[in-house]
Length: 148
Image 1 (spheres, rainbow, N blue to C red):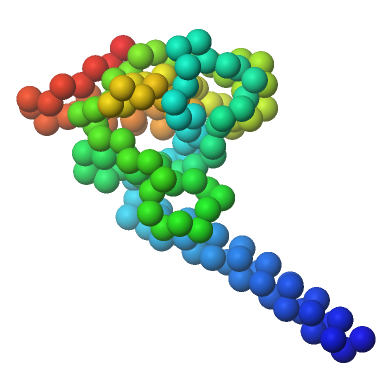
Image 2: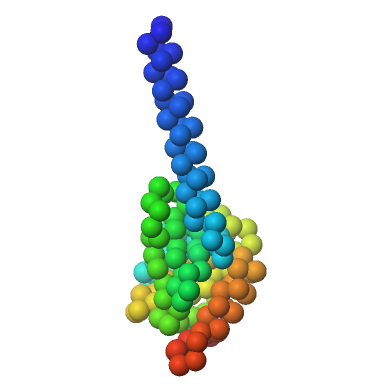
């Protein structure tokens, strides 16, 4: 009986510790500011599938001339993807369709982009989209930025 209670106590403590580390990681990512909720779908085909598969929920952070994208459900402190401002080309925007409406946040707008030849989609709120497009257009003189 004592062994079972000890084992249960250890499991509960590990779960609480894991949740604490998730929260601490997100706090560390957001402490420098310039973050927004952003879902990402990488290497999207020319005709995107609207079944909702392939989306990863994350947090994006502005860092100079780069966007650093972190998965929410990860313990990694390094960004999963880094997008350079000069390499981002906006190909279009659309609203979620079909199963995507369930896979993404309720107010999401999907932005289709090209980054170094890779087609990707970013889903974010309208406010975050306004800030993202303003950040793209505010590139230093001489940098190529394509916003559709």
